[in-house]
Length: 394
Image (cartoon, rainbow, N blue to C red; front, side, top):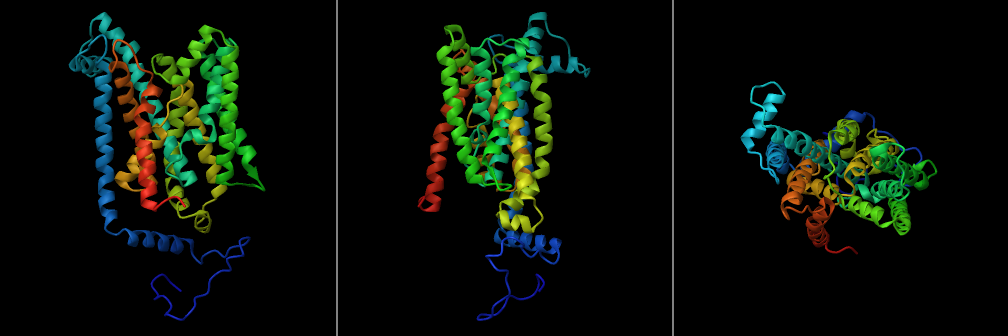
């Protein structure tokens, strides 16, 4: 039977595979035809919405890029030492050899040694967290998932807090960052190994294992704080609250390879994430190795999140809210959602860092606290909206 044949009449039965036979499912005669059937079914279910969504994606991308560029320029100029926007552009043009002019010594130092490293780090960290959130929600098939679910953030926090409390300094100023990154990667590998059984990893088991590891990591952090002195407790608290105040070009270079690698690899999994959204069994029929896909994406998420947490501390809700907002605006297709979430995360964190620096000037609000204050009410609204649409959880 081809996709163009009429469906069986009422009273007739069409041959179908035995539901109980899950060991050796019968593949379709032609995977390309099967994929086209799925694509045509998806298109027919939203024939009117598809053109609007295709048209919205370029507009959203251009809007996010424009907003990000504007926020970056504003962040570079606004602060205790004001630098006019024209001077910022002139200095940047001068440095890259496109004309412009150099500023005075103080302005050049503030712009290139303090402001711009912070702006670039905000873009990298925000893009990493936003992209990681989109991948996590695609892997788990749940728009309420975020990178901290499988213990990456908590594991990285244990590494950083342990390095501070024990007074480790074997890598100089890089000790806390390296310990946080290694601990984050080790934690996600531990969670994956503990949740694997019979050659497979179930999503529910993975989440429950992540919850247990998060609780254990919280206990370890509390233990380190108990034995730390007052100066170390202050440093630990500042790190846990999340901040970009210590941004430098070396820290930018530290997170840059991990962020670029993860952000470059993630879009190549967009089509397989779309197929996985149909369910594990349909995805397998369409040629997706679900287990290998899950392992690869968890490693990408671990790389992005651990690198971000290592240099900026714990910053919550970016990976949760940004993908969901873009999904509301443009639909669930991952071909736009994955790179769009990276752009959206960069926009949110750049704006958040600008607000953290200026809202209570001359003091500076912790960035992680600010994102949690703004993200929590939206999360409550999101829960109520989801529950209302589904008619309750039961």
